[in-house]
Length: 314
Image (cartoon, rainbow, N blue to C red; front, side):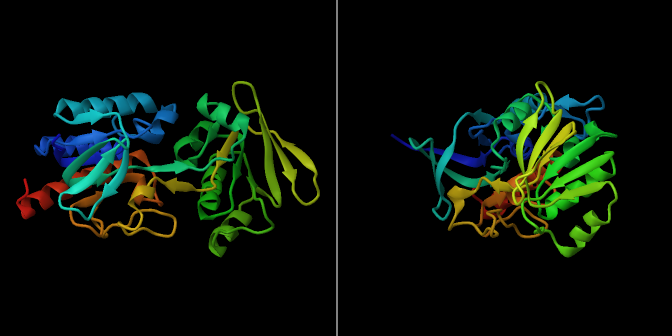
């Protein structure tokens, strides 16, 4: 049975993947996009999106992703539910397995597999997160909803320190829950947090439970040195303990940093392998916004189009 050959394969269906698909389809690259296990990516777990341009009244994450999908399909993108489970990027053409069963080949591939937020794993954390009850992994995205309120944030790295500082400008009080007696954040970021009057750092502390039926009403924190418990009267709970890029299947083929983020040539979406492009959160640990992901998706499609034209494959 002959294998299917694709001119432009897009792996992942967040804002980066769908934007890449829109541009690739308009360039007549006949893109095929595999959604992965979570069609629409992280935004499908987000209720209100107020910071994506073009939606003055805001929009829900799932609705935004449906709009992007419809726009990509309007220009001829073939969107398929499925998971790329193996990749041989050094082959010519590049070879892939879909759901461990079907082999396909492609001239170019745009990787937009995203990154998954790390969570504490508490039952109420999951429940309230899925019900849009005030649990979030993105202060920049959701901090606005807690203006003038008291919130808590978990984490000790640069991202946690940066997000705590961001929240301090919007919120009345920010509790920063740090598991150890020191932070991993840079000294400059630590000083910024420590010098912000409305941030209270809870050292040697762990989150034991999140209270609230429909929305966050409090957080139970335990001091892991003394065993003492304390309930924080907060309405928002932010988790900033890191993200894991979904790039495992590309290990030993594509250049990554120590966390697994794909590295691209600055100012482009090009990876270390010709014809392979990385866009969105799988290659971005700094911004991680829907709009920056979408912008990089555009770059990926334009880079793929130029590569095909110069290689005279298409």
